[in-house]
Amino acid sequence: MKLFLQSYKALSISLFMIWMVAMVFSAEFILSQVMILFVAMALFEYRPGFPWLRWRRELRDNTRTWWWYRPFLFVAIPFLLVLVSAAWSSDIPYTLERLRIKAPFLVLPWALVGIPRISRKEFHFILYFLLALMTIACLYVGLNYLVHFQEINDMIGRGKPIPTPSNHIRFSLVLCFAILSGFFLIAERFFIRYRWERWLILGLTMFLLGFIHLLSVRSGLLVLYLAVLVWLLRYVFLTRRWAVAVALGVSFVFLPIVAYQLFPSFRTKLEYVRWDLVQHQHGTGANYSDSDRLTSLKVGWEIGKRNPIFGVGAGDLKREVNLEYARSFPDAPTIKMPHNQYVTLFAGTGLVGVGVFTLGFFYPLFYRRHYKDPLFLALHVVVFASFLMENTLENNFGISFFLLFLLLGLNRLRPDPTRIPPPPG
Image 1 (cartoon, one colour):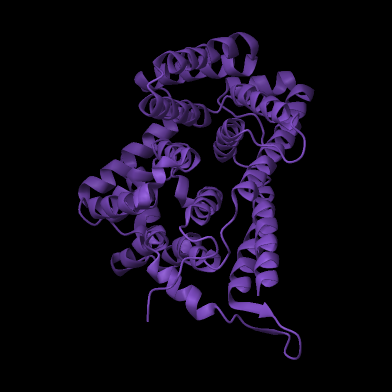
Image 2: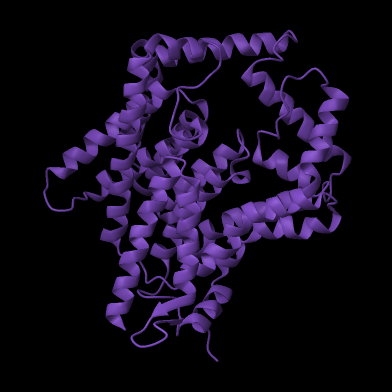
C-alpha cells in the first residue's frame, strides 16, 4: 500500500508539471487530458489479475473526505453559482457551456483529494520547475521580440501586446506567480543538490522580474507590485523591521523608472495608455483597447443595476451583453464581456452571487489560518487583483492557473501527512 501511494503521488506530481506546460503554451487538448487522467486515477487503480483495472479501494473514503474537508466544498462555489442561476437562465446552450468551463471547480478537488500530502521538498521542486519553465517561455518570447523588434514595437504603439505562447494577460499572471515563487524559494534557501543552485534561482528570478517589465502587460505588473506590497506589510507585521521593508519597497519603486529607460516596449506601452485614456475622455477612443475595456464595464454595470439581487442568470449574460451593446453602444467595433470578474458576477448572479463567490474565494485562505503561508497568500492576492482588470475565472486558462496552485496549496497545508482522515462512522 505504501509503495502504491508513493507511485500515485509521483505520477500526480508529473501530471501537475505537464499541466503547467500545457497551460503556459496554451495546449488546451493536453490540459483537458491531464484533468481527465486525474479523474481516472481517482476512480480506478491497477491490480494484478483480470480485470487489471478496478475501482479504487479508497474511493468511498476519498469521497467522504472531500465532503468533510470544507475548503474543497467552498472551491465548488463558482460552478454551483452557474448551476443555481440556470433556474432563471433561458439560453440553454450558453448555460451548458458555462457549466462545462466551471466543472473543474467541482470535479478536481474530489479527484485530487486522495493524493498523499506533497512534502515541502517536493513542493519546492514543483516551483523550481515553474521557474525554469517560465524562463524557457520568456526566452522564446524575447528572441521573437528581438527578431521582429520594430514591427512589434509598432504593434505596442497601436495597443497590441508582445506575442506570447498563450493569452498575454494570463501569461503575465503566471509569470508574476513564477517571480513570487522564485522569491519564496530564495527565502526558503532551497536547492536540489548543489548550493550554487541558490544563485541560479536568484538569477532566474531576476531575469523574470526584468522580463515582466519588458513584456509590459499592465495586469501582470499591477498584481506583482500589489503582491510584493502585501508581502512587505506582512514582513513588517511579523518582524517589525521597518528599515528592511522600506529599503525593499524603495527598490521596487525604482524598478518602473529603470524599466522606462531600458525597455522601449515599456516606454511605448505607457505612452499608448496615456494617449488612449485622453481619447476616451474626449469620446474618440472607441477603437482602442482601453476604451473597449471601459465600455465593457459600463455594459456589465448597467445589466447588473437592472437586476441587482440575483442578476440575469449566468447563462443569459452573453445575450444581455449583446442587447446592451446594441442599445447603448451600437457603433462599438467589438463586443466584449465585462473585463472584471466582479462586474461579470454582479450582472450574471447579482449581489447574492458576488457575496457567495467572495466567501468561496477567501474561505480556503482563512481556513486554519492558511494566510500565514506566504505563497498561498500571494496566490490569492494575485488572482483577486486580476479580478479587478479581467474576468479571470471565465476561461479555461484562468481557471487552470487558479485551481492548479490552489489545490497544490491545499494539499500541502492539509493537517495529516498522508490524507485527511474521514469523519468517524
